[in-house]
Each structure stands twice: as C-alpha cells, then as structure tokens.
Image 1 (tube, one colour):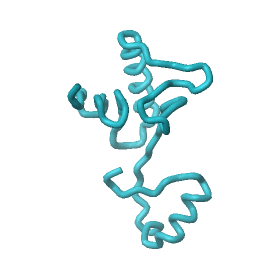
Image 2 (image 1 turned 60 degrees about the vertical axis):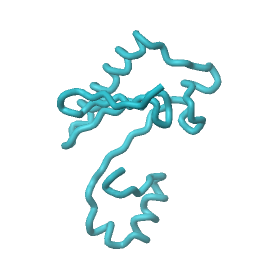
Image 3 (image 1 turned 135 degrees about the horizontal axis):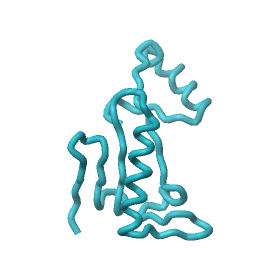
Amino acid sequence: SGRGIFHNENKTFLVWCNEEDHLRIISMQMGGDLGEVYRRLVSAVNDIEKRLPFSHNDRLGFLTFCPTNLGTTVRASVHIKVPKLAANMEKLEQLAKKYSLQVRGTRG
C-alpha cells in the first residue's frame, strides 16, 4: 500500500495514488485551453473506470476515502496572476468571498 504519482510524458496528466483519497486524477497545462484539459481528463477517467469501477451511492454520489470529497468528486482550479489585485489582500479576499472562490498561493 505505497504511494506514487504516475504521469504522461508532458506531465499534463497525473494519477496520484494513495494520497488523501485512493486516486487523485489531475489534468493540467499552461495556457488557456480549458477544453483540452477537460477532454483529456474525461477521456482518461472513462478509461480508468472501465478497468477499475468507482464506488457510487445513489444518495451520496461517488464514494471517497475523505468525506469532504463525496459527490461529484470534481474540483477545478485555475491559476492566474493578478498582481494589482493581490497588492490589496483585503479587497482580493472580499472579491473571492463574493464569488465563492478560494485565494491560494502560487503553489496551489
């Protein structure tokens, strides 16, 4: 029961085993082509599920080891630089709260 990260050659698709949940599946890349990131993720998740069915409950959705990840199990992140807004953290936090967003550092 070890941990590991498996990734493609470009490191735009990763599967992280036995971290917070059994699998954390990540699709990412630089630039603004969110469609490509999403298509790669969906294609890979479908391929993985053909070989390793995911646990699902009609009431709770997809089951995970960590209860906060139950349901769709999907979390999306976009990292953008906003230096002028970041210079005023109070205003940035207010804006993030208004739109139910989280402010995080450059390391995620």
